[in-house]
Image (cartoon, rainbow, N blue to C red):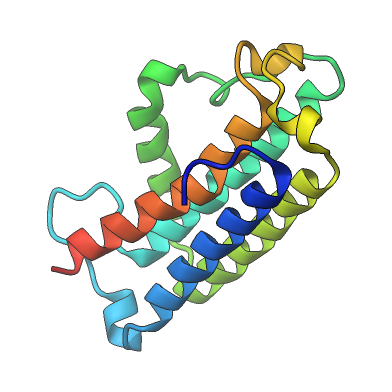
Length: 165
């Protein structure tokens, strides 16, 4: 499916890729789900990938909450710039390294539902009109949601497939 351009497509593709990722992971044995990825992969296992997605969900929720109050959120996170996202991602990986796979799945599912509920609050214009909200700059709110959901889940599937070869 092409990049979403309306609310229905945004919700549908987000759900589709979320379920694809979840089903893909569930297709591995317990041992396979917990096994380490090859050396050189920042996210060392499926748990790391899920917690990465979870934390990006949380950041999206934070940006949204602050931005919709008319304030400017620190993006991508306090102390980081878009150029230093790799360092942020390493910090995320370290932060959640002691999380169990079971908890990672629960956290990922929970934060996905929260992001989805934010999307559901808005109509097409609110989601896809560029420059509508000061905090989203020259892009649309929907573009942020696409990045935090469907396209991020697609990235995760590709990463796990590559690591499991």
